[in-house]
Length: 277
Length: 328
Image (cartoon, rainbow over all chains, first blue to last red; front, side):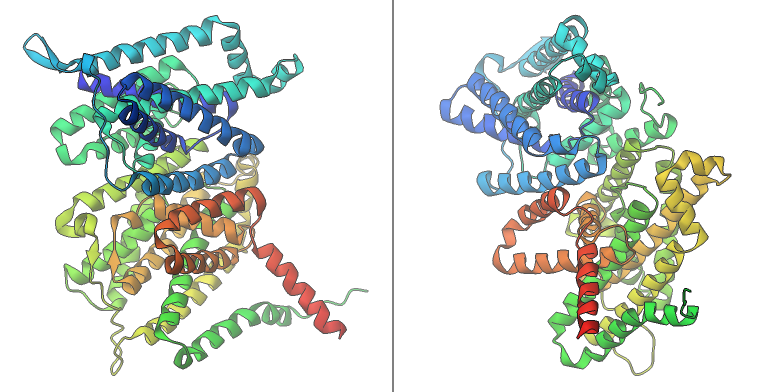
């Protein structure tokens, strides 16, 4: 159960990452930093306003704005230049990490779950924290919304079409720049929300960017790019692997994830569900 | 009618600047302070590391984010041999460390080269982080997150020679020049040309009958070995190796050196190594806490405004200078 709750946070992280890459071919390695910033934004606002909900809103809106700025200022110019994108976003990781260290200090901050989800409930003799169960519902709701958005709405159709043939979409007179900006904002908002929602479990500290990024990559390796279902499945698998890893090899938590990622890439070099191009 | 210089003369002209620089650096030994020697030594070690990274990135199109794994494995192997097993002779430690790196690279190469493009990037990143994790957890051998402390200068086993910064400086210059020579020959050999072909169009090279996988595998191992050698020297220089030397932060340093220096030339990354090391020095004097901020800004600056790195600009400046001298 803990693994699944953790998986939901991973889902929020990875689906944004995979959406952004799937739609725009932008590999945003600063995604982990957006997560970190989301956690810090939310925690700061939640502390000031004493309201969990305002914290969530702050994380979502704040990271949405940061994401938009990133895309408009930098990444839009590097369309289809993957090495340049990687270098630039790695630079951004350093910048964000150091800024976070500067502003919020070196000590990890841990969020508190809101009052209405405090405590735990007894399910068949095992206690589960209400907050984690709430997280699972939130995650599933987001997944469902995203799925419906991507599969059933006009915007979703444009996005799916854009994944396959960007030029054709532009030729049809659709404002692709606007669409891709929106997708980038959406992806950033999700990771921002994840940052704050995950803070009672994972905390926030300035050195977490790469960790979060690698978790997102591990999910992508299982789930493939651009598909909600894949990201959801990958996130749950990684969440479970991590929880079991923590139980059985307590010192090697991340170790098991790296190992799983490497083994999967070894067997299926294009990802577990990925199509071989 | 075109007059061509005899080949040997053009080769001398080509090599002269490097030989002269090397001799000049060695000749400077008695006149510069130990700190300056430390700085130049560090630049040259990083230069070897960055050039080996460029062998993969610039020449073979293998975009790796786990190259520091080999750097760190080299450093750790040397450190562990010296501290834990009391083997001090440089002539044992260096080959043993390089052999270890060779083994690691041979295994990692098989794993990483399964994947292509982006997934190659991911898997090398994961392999590097895996190494960092192992080094952090395996406390009895690696000293955990505190790192392996107290690696002495190498023992060359020459009678009447006690190692000091000056001798180490000369040793590193020798290693640097030999590495430059080997890397230059490698990239200008048929093997190097084949690598460039694979970088530009792997499918075509495969159709021409080249075993592209084997080429990439070999260059992955060779690059790893040079990185490992740099790691051994780095351990000796700093006296300490920490888990971060295996992971992404060190890999990205090498990456930055390559793109600042420019990847089109064998020696470009050496220029980049000098630039990054000097930048780090300046930042450590004025704003030590803000070094990552400056590092990150350097990435953004180079990607957006300095495509191709500074080396092409330097070369152009140098040739203009030559023309200027020639005219007057």
